[in-house]
Length: 463
Image (cartoon, rainbow, N blue to C red; front, side, top):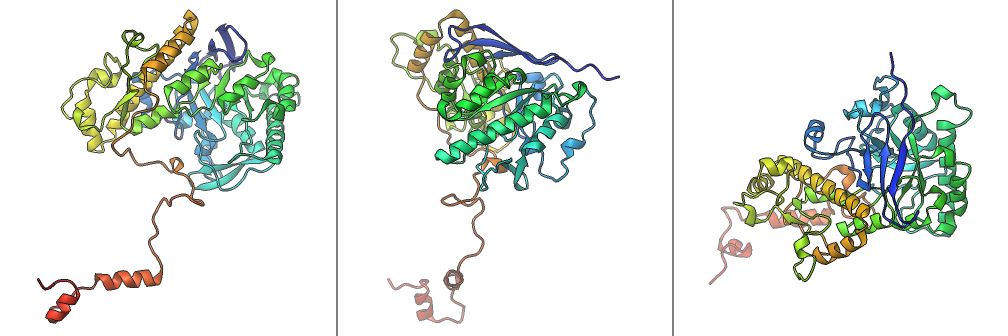
């Protein structure tokens, strides 16, 4: 007998001085799922898996309590296998297909993040995707059907995002399309025409475009009035958009698709009121061989009167770590630091052994978890602004550079071929005259060649 469908997601704020543009602490709860304390980061997945971390390792040695997946990871075929996954009414076929635990909150969006800019443009009823077999269009009704079938815990609405700086006419189309897609999704998921037992139990996060407030004012007004009862949160694509959140929607959780360059940028986005943030720099650091080592608040001994600037991490490719038997992070209690040392990780990197990136990913996830835990405690103490100033003084302004080469890039990590972009694979053939020149240069003198022939080829230059 199938279990009853759980009630909707709830989000409660534990304290905030202002409704918008202020750091805040909250709790996002979905019955039967892990509770997410906010602000927090949302780990990004590749086909439903955090890169370099197997599901059993994630369960036993990390504190991950949410995941983000892009639908374009799973619909490369005409009849995607993920839609054929058998599941009970209370189960998510997407979670079963990716072997994600049922109690893990899973967020689904149309595209992975960060995404590759497709060569084709979005249309009035579809967005361009990059699947494992090439680019395709995802129609708005297909995405709604995917949410119905896959039953993620949270679905991010489709947004018409421009590939480059949009003009006035393009901005108007972005708003009109996103507005229409949001209305369509909410009507098909929760509308009055949908039978009560057929209504989706997935929470819906309405997108807010990276445009000025005046350019999407009608859409925002509609979110406040007609669509308010059906949306459970907001999805934003730049930190400046946090300023445009209407006060009537301030109680909703805000998922910011952020690509911060440093932890300084993360703190700024939290200070503006972001609740959930994507942090691609975490995985990028792991793949670069960087062991993160920052904390918030900054180390107390360096807050006042110290000119020392601390790095955000250490490059484990460095020869200094060949015989270093200390842990990746001083005092760190993660699985990697409790069982291995820097010399071992350095050896694994130089040997191009994949275990190196797995250990670095486990460690860096732990550092990021503690970083956000420190942020939440600081906000609740009321010392967040002072702690941010101290953090900015103590830590460097940029991430450390890697001196090695990371693992092989996955296809969606490479830019699409286009004007001014490098080729993924160099050309195998060139112009015929270039090939003839190379052939001529490759010829060497035969044993029958006399001294003048050898001299002509450069083998017998006169002294």
